[in-house]
Amino acid sequence: MEKIDNKVCNIIIDNSYKNFEENLKKQGNYDLVLIISDSNVYNSQGHEFIKHINARIVYEYIVSPGEDSKSLDTYEKIIEYCVRINLSRKSVIIALGGGVVGDLAGYVASTYMRGIDVIQVPTSLLAQVDSSIGGKTGINIGNFKNIVGTFYQPKFTYINVDSLKTLSEDEFLSGMSEVIKYSIIYDYEFIDYLIGNSESIINRESDKLYYIVKKCASIKAKVVEADEKEGGFRKILNFGHTFGHGVEKLCHISHGEAVSIGMNMAFKMALREGFIKEEYCNKFLEVCEKYSLPMNFENADEEEVLNIMKSDKKNSFSKINLVLPVGLGEVEVINTISEEKILGIIKESKNA
Ligand SMILES: NC(=O)c1ccc[n+]([C@@H]2O[C@H](COP(=O)([O-])OP(=O)(O)OC[C@H]3O[C@@H](n4cnc5c(N)ncnc54)[C@H](O)[C@@H]3O)[C@@H](O)[C@H]2O)c1
Image 1 (cartoon, rainbow, N blue to C red):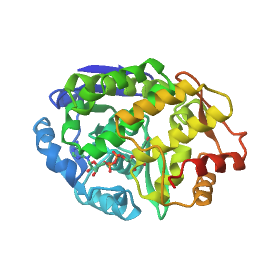
Image 2 (image 1 turned 90 degrees about the vertical axis):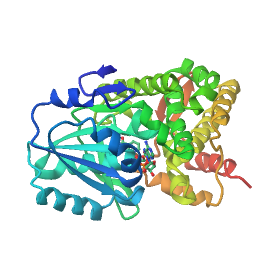
Image 3 (image 1 turned 60 degrees about the horizontal axis):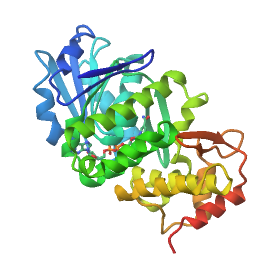
Image 4 (image 1 turned 120 degrees about the vertical axis):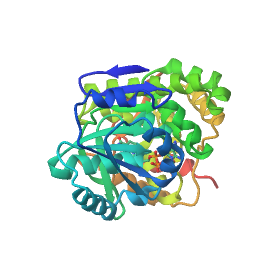
């Protein structure tokens, strides 16, 4: 077990749930524990996890797997359940699951009785390296993703890297795009590690999982500490997401696939603008190929992709904020690129 601690984040990395109780106890005495999870995660991880919570009254609320659960309707049902079981300000919510459960449970905890404690126990690769760290919570309203939410830090994030072994192959590989993202935004040498160790990472060897998750969680924690409320620096985490946003919505692909397509568009743009050299693009393509990540999209209209990018809530003063590579392991937020140029890159990235 190792800790990543700073002024904002408190993360524990482990390869089982064994040390969870010890860390829970350090938070004080909770009268009730409510575990929020989804049925996939609960069926594969719930039993093992609960074994490691001692002598407390434990309730569970299990939602359906998938993005649709991040809804006002599910939120309301959970709040009603919290009232029914007398969840109090002295209680704690544990989010056991991927990013959907983490965002939903975090939002419930941050608003129920004006805020009760929450602990994140992420079980997907995306959640372990990204969504469970940094305190963003939220739900979707209609088609508007994460349009309602809060910044609310968990008491701690407990990462059991071995829980990734029950994740589907597709979800695992999709999460690898977020892992690759960290090498581009912060740590260029990490890209060589991901290329050189791809086979054992794909086979989910415990020591490799531990290494990559710890590396990414540490970077995320550093970025969040420097800019908790996303005033500026934290925006680098959106690398691949601005371009990816449109294709994710229109092509019905996973978040990770959309991010890899979005990162590729950002690379093409950076090359076109002369910010980086072709060799760097090739290295990026090589690492994505190792993890079978898509580079182009299909079945969506290019203008519509652009329109969705324009409506991204992360833009300001009607300008599209692009996070582009500007050097090895270095990105910058750039908002001076014309819509025509952006549309050109989108067109180039569509499979005929
Ligand atoms: N809060 C943030 O900072 C932040 C950052 C990035 C993404 N997000 C959000 O995260 C969500 C996506 O997260 P996700 O990719 O984890 O999706 P998810 O939570 O839907 O999980 C993906 C699938 O994997 C299953 N699963 C998860 N862990 C498992 C395990 N160990 N064993 C078996 N099955 C398992 C889930 O049941 C689900 O079917 C989106 O809603 C996105 O908006 C939030």
